[in-house]
Image 1: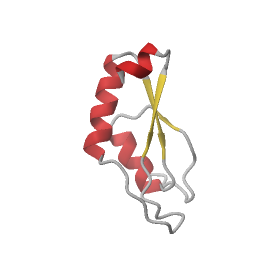
Image 2: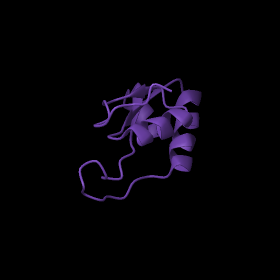
Image 3: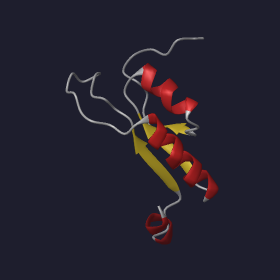
Length: 80
């Protein structure tokens, strides 16, 4: 992250997508890794965006402290 800050990055974008919405399974980072990235980014004064494609993934990353969803999930979010 220090390299990105030195290059002038202001936000950090993380990808949390198992591929289930597109039916193409893919590896993704763990929620613990996302939480660690959020903590480090916030300590550096950065906002964290997350790429997600499902409602469940959106909830997962928000629970880890992500500030902004970069995309709307392919499925509806629950009102609760």
